[in-house]
Image 1 (cartoon, protein in one colour):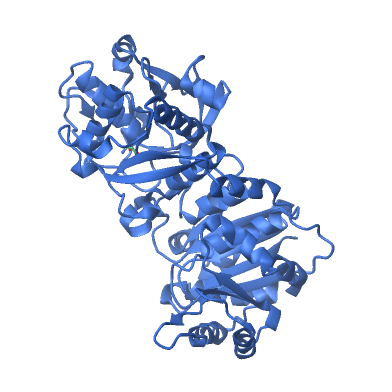
Image 2 (image 1 turned 180 degrees about the horizontal axis):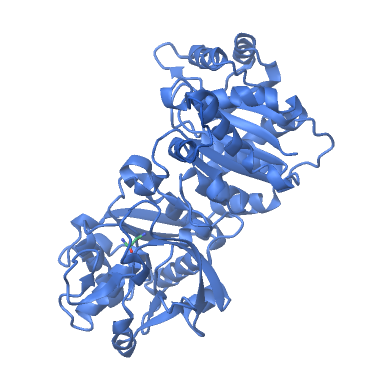
Length: 538
Ligand code: GLN
């Protein structure tokens, strides 16, 4: 039987519940336990796939093709184990299932209500990953802040599970904020007291409080929080602001969070966590020998969460290369062929981001032209690869009006075209080419050298693809398809001959990069930028 830890948040949003859950899970995993994390989001969308990055940040894609909350990316990066469809549940999914059952007649004769029907469905999903003995511990993060109207059914489900599960299999962690008032020069515990009271008013008593704070809490304040919130004194955990999210597991370890959790769950005699690999990563991360400058050209650069997996992949790859990657966020909308040199000349590498729609496309194409002509290392992901194809068609093959069907439905030269299986698709939600697909790599290519393998799988999220009608023309002029979907013959990777490092991929490598397994293409791209920097004598 699996044990369940629920993580709620109070006072404000953005306290880092996802990082907290991932960090605790990491410490438990490092003691030999099989751990997974799931996220319950209170919004009514079925998934975040239809949301704008400005609304929701990045949409993270799992192996089995779920479009999910970006916290699942943190879970995978920390734990190095894949998540799945079942790891992200939304209010929309819960209602969809209950309404489906109502129509089928499963509740014939009854009034269908939030309690018990919605809460029963929430509980069923909360316990789902505990079946089949795959995991020892399942952490469940509840999105939003306690007190929000829309998360009430989730909190009620947690309350009910208290009576359904063995007390040794059930734990509630509450993350709160202890703000510092600079005028009073004091940390204030009242918001924490109120947010715990709120939770208690729903019938949920947290076992452990994690207090985010800018300054050390001090013994007196810990005692006060413990007494007012009905938790034992050692279960008030201080979570000081950290320099890096990768310090958080170690900081929580210093506070003995893992010992307290295991004690409450009835575990005895587990070995101390083995964090050797993690420490090794951190050592390289914190003591880089060199620095390279990489431009991230995209249209959501103002918002860090929009490309979170990409930023994190660069951190993993930098540590592997013993260097620091300084990312320059470049708004693609402001780039033109005329000003591109001014914006990009200081860079050692150019990365062009994924995306949808034609805003900023011409700027991306200008950046790619610059990278190709000046032989600056280039890495394009999904839309970035598609733009590299368009750039090559226009400026090398001389097809002036080359574009993607996404930007011009009636074009005569769609070098990127709608995939055949997408042609009948009408609905927008969950209908792209999603999840992991195999790819065969050609011999003696940058891709094969980076992966050190001939067959790989990577995760996708797109509707358009390289138009094979142009394949021969591209190859004859020096842009090669170096990775191909073995059955459907789809072009998944393109490379330029006669360029030190120019790679475009139709998939999203950033979803698979973890601390312990930095993604080979990011690692190799960063190595190419280091080589470029040295070659240029920078
Ligand atoms: N808009 C492009 C497509 O749907 C690229 C998608 C992406 O970059 N994820 O094919």
